[in-house]
Length: 244
Image (cartoon, rainbow, N blue to C red; front, top):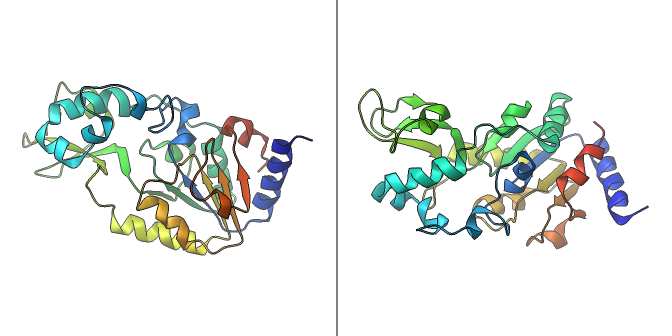
């Protein structure tokens, strides 16, 4: 038996014995669905643009240069034809069976909900929700994708902003509180697809005091030594083999 096979069997046991599992997910979970990772070698951060991606998706850049913001946003972040992969689906199945308390995610793609997950704490918001900055009218993602240039409200004419947490913006207190409560209640915390370097989101792991901490990621993270089970592999090599 290979080392990976042994670890997959250990993961299966942890999931089987878990009663209050919480998943904490990052961009790596959605790469198998065709959504680029920000920090991997092939991710958005390694590409060349007129401005660094970190600057483009900041609050001040959105305010000062919305046309350039939306050119990047529509091209690289608004991927509406992506479908949930096996990892998303496994989490939804565990919730449906009553074994999972839900998902805390740094992702903004809405794929957890598309897979069937009901309790999803979106720390960084969602591309699927957009609001007029003046009157608050709601717009779906298709409205943004199909707009020409800067999307504006069809009611009052003001600019429409994605309900996504940009750099320099604070996280939603109700979402943070819900995520913390779920993590504190968990007996198993499975962290996957995140580098755990983006705060305050990554700091939420400190609220876990349950039985098993599982870390699954392709690269190293600052929390690797604290994990009860560490798997460094592609999710497509792991989750299709887990039985629910």
